[in-house]
Amino acid sequence: KKLVLCLIVYAAPEVYLFAREAREKSNIVLTCLATGFYPKDIIMNIKRNGRILTIEDGVVTSGVRPNEDDTHQRRDHVEILRTDVANYSCQIIHVCAFTTFMSWNSNLSENI
Image 1 (spheres, rainbow, N blue to C red):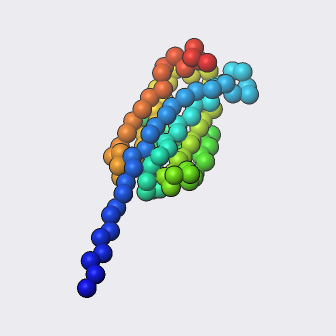
Image 2: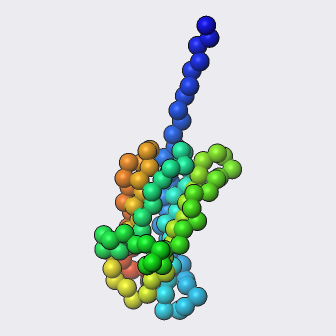
Image 3: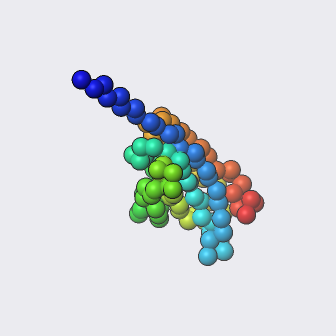
């Protein structure tokens, strides 16, 4: 008999949050990027004051895409008013990251 050893390899996502200028000068675009994770199953939520935003709220997603090193990435973004003072956060749920929350700086428009 041959002994076959199967290893399950997991990689936790690296999460990046950033804001950039929007085409409309009164707006900014908030982006949440998770990269370097394996397996590819991941949940990403952008929240406004704790409420999950949806495509009806303007969230755009890249979906899960492959990286060159067999890990994966996903990028979601939403355009908001520059004057919006709500608390925005990104929630990541992944087998290696449990649940991760990161928040954008409340002075977003000053950073751009």
